[in-house]
Length: 635
Ligand code: 7RM
Image (tube, rainbow, N blue to C red):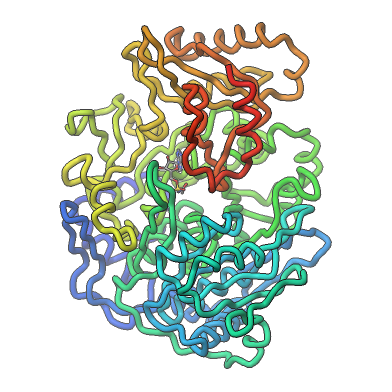
């Protein structure tokens, strides 16, 4: 039996039991079996959830890039590590082998050193999805600098807030970026942001769009000439297991963004372990995660997890709609992708388009499909299953968070039987608990509650950068001795988990707890509905009533609105019951979304409650124009 790679359901159960019975033995075996250590640990785990203190593999020494790159050179030197697919399909794709990656990362690392960056320094990376982004991340890790990647769709204010919060002294960026037919003046945004960032002494600028940009003398340096002059080998910095690897910001429900800090050894072990199992990776696979490296999904499942396993990982610069809506399917066909990992929001957007975009491409290379980021509704699940996987590819609905570093609940494909909308079973080492409002654990099956995790796993975030108290308050105070996820979940009769959404999205109507996700699911079953979002608003008698924002498909556009409203409520009544009927239904052309594709319900709640004097922080909004439209037509 291998702890590292699970291939049968019985094996899953026995590995899982072992991981709970003796977590330290389990994780130490996984860590021994598959990674390269400069020095082994003295203690596997030390933890205290009350103080929010966790360390794994204490006393061990390693460098994560040795695990992700160097050790593959003997066996996979000429294998593609990173396959870069540019925004413009007419531009050639670039295959970067492990050997080339080694050289590029080494050179970049030497450039960082020449610029005075060393172990423990924070380096902010604000780059589009070009190879330099992955290389910069790895170069930081090579020399022990702490990277903080900021998604290149964020505004100047969002960027400067993050730079200042983590105290970055260097910024790595590019002249501009391509997104579909648009090119974006990234450096202009950087210049604006840096007006408020006195701590940034140097900016390295990669060339991508070749746009004319301002270069601040003494501060800004073109990257390429520095790389050309750099030495192609860089001795990796020997890091302690608990040395910080990166800081990644995630928005809280209130207040400023939280800089989640992840450390070296535990993060490496867990991201690699879950990648191997959740994607059942084989040597000749071509794996594609469509996320941006600016999110945790990109960190763990484009860069670190795949590379630690010697996989080929695709980096796509563009968008699903350019040059047309067949781009994803075109890339799968072109590169013979074996695993596709994407977000429900992308699936819904693509499912709205003509099916010819899909059927004109050969998708037979696909073996496994994945989703992440939000609950997937049944309709989208079936579309993905029928039209993309041709009913042959298991769908892994992976539940996790920036804070968890890796996937916590997910089917293992070809091992765990899947059910639409269920993330199914915990990964080995993960001990979920459902809690009630009184802080008691709800035992048994066919129950729902607040989702907590009872025991640490290797890649749990160690703190919020600069604010350990907030880390403790946010995650370890709601339920004593537990990590609180902020999500609600139900456990069905066989013990499968279904994530029902953020618990702050639960609406109590006439004393009934209603999750927004199941209502949205049922509305989306209506043939004329493309997408929807439900929020609560105050109601004299019921306490709260439901307000639905609904995007229609083209086929619904010409129809009588009041009839549609009746039909939608009829569908809800059928699926959930009359209690979940909507008091108000507003038809909209879009929903306010964050740049990572999550609906900003806070704004929708305010509009529904006619409380629009202060919408709060909207700086992470992808489509602010839609907010104005919704407000104007609010009911
Ligand atoms: C990986 C990521 C975390 C929040 C999380 C959930 C929601 C993520 C799923 C999901 C239902 C899923 N990190 N979420 N995955 N909900 N099913 N498979 O998304 O920090 O950006 O977001 O996303 O609410 O708490 S994140």
